[in-house]
Every structure is written in structure tokens, then in C-alpha cells.
Length: 286
Image 1 (tube, one colour):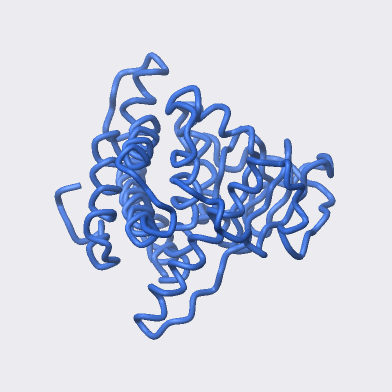
Image 2 (tube, one colour):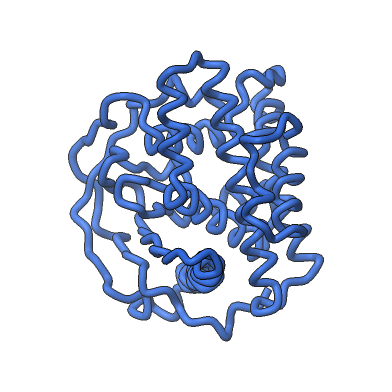
């Protein structure tokens, strides 16, 4: 993957070094923003996301950057993420325009340790990257990628896949998917709620695949890059995480999908390149 010719996104806000503050409790109810946070934390920790909703705290006074061009050029990881975000902006703007829609770009917040969000409570480093529908921003503590490299290896496209997946949650927000799922979850038991989360996450993997499809020429993607993305998707499958945590694989507790499912839906998006082909809510075969 070659990012050298890409500009940086102007939608990056750098809060690193601003320090943590007082506690901010997660908002009431089982909002989809809180669900996404808990799901990602559960993905990393192997815990049931429903058991950790509401437990996140954080807060910070932030320093805002109007343009990520102010990121230090020797801050290679941050610059890389900013360029990947720019690529997603370019491709999704074109995709939305083809359907006579305007794409509203998400923000991306870089932080260390803790920070606060609008509508999704406090962000903590342990949460990993997540998208908050309340303020339409992606939150990333870059140290997450050190954890990812221990399971998916050191590669740039694995990191790009993570960003594209979180951007995909923004796409779902723009299309009204998250609101619809949240309404259904509020009337569902735990098993059904988990199953809905799986469909949300697999659709996000598929949408990330669409981005890779559309960006493959501009980024000079290779088959090795795609294998790296698939390896990253596999490394965060629910069955893989349950085994690594020494637990029995229980599909009813899945919130993201199995490794095979995550790879399959990313591949479906990459090969098909169609948003309509990513409707995980209209198929019985995930």
C-alpha cells in the first residue's frame, strides 16, 4: 500500500498530551454509541459487552487542530492514519454522489489514555478504536495498533482496515442503520441483541471492503495487502478471541462475528464493490 501521494485529512483532531480529567458516566439506556464502545472493548478483553456498558469513564480538555497538516511529519503513525482517512473521504464522497447524496465526513480524534465524547461517555485507551454517533467522530489511541501488531503482524493495511471499519460505522450512521438497529435492540433479549450487533459489525467489514475495492488503484494495493487485511479481520473474530481467552466458543455470545464471517464479508465488499451487496440484515447466511 502506498500512501505517499495522498494528502492528509483536514478532519483530524489531536488531543494527545492533553491529559485525563474527571469521570464521565455513559449515558442512560442501551444507545448504539455505548454499544459500539462496549463491543470493541469486549473484542479486546474477551468480556461480554453488555456487562461493561456504563462502566467507562474519562474526560479531558482538548486541543483542537483545524487541519491535520499540523501533525508533526515525523509522527509517522498519525500521518498514516490521517492519509487513510483522506482516502476514505475521497472514495465515499464519490460513492454517495453516485446516489445523489452528499457525504458528510466524520471527524477523527487522536488521544492518549482518556478523553470525552459527545453522547458516548468517556473514551479509554483499553476501548480500542470506536465510532461515536453522537458527535460523528472516530476515537483512536494509537497504542491500540501495538496490540494489533501482536496478533495480525506489523503491516500498514491491517491498520488501514481498522480505520475503514470505523468509518463504515459512520456510513451506517449516515444511512440510518444504527438508529434502526438501536430501536430493535431496545426491544430484544440479549441473544437477539448480540445477533444484531454481529450483523452491524459484519456489514461494517463489508463496507470496509468496498473502500478497499474503490481505493485499490490510488493506493496501489497488492494481494499481500489484502491478505494482511483478512488476517486482521480474522484476528478479531469472536471465536478466535474466545479461544485466546481460554473460554469455550459460544456463538450466542458473539457480537462481531466469527473470524471466517469477518473475512467473508470483507471479501464480499472488496470483490463486489456494492453497498447493496453489504446488506447483512436481509440474509440468513452470514
